[in-house]
Length: 109
Image 1 (cartoon, rainbow, N blue to C red):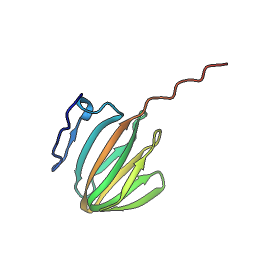
Image 2: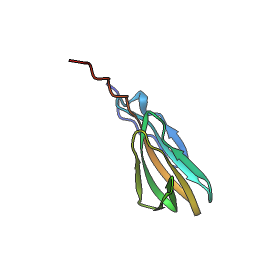
Image 3: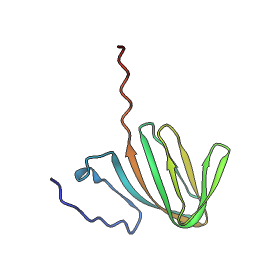
Image 4: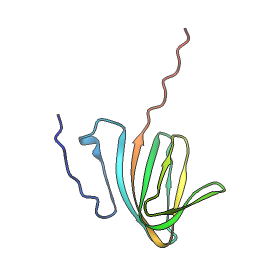
């Protein structure tokens, strides 16, 4: 059995928890986007939950644009994508990326 671990996420970076967690968490990341920088989310086999820590920006998907600020969270479900764009003060965020196994094909009865 694995022992609990403490890992610092004070600055930008990614933690790979696979050496301790056996579930679907692929990565725990912290990002710092400067004004105008963007970050795209949404791979075919992942879901994500992203939490805004400081700053402001927008979450964009097609024609949809949602304002983001500290305390805001967004969830990106399987099969979708979203881009986060930092506003004038930049944006600090932390997120959890989850791997989703494709559904098993149904067998004929």
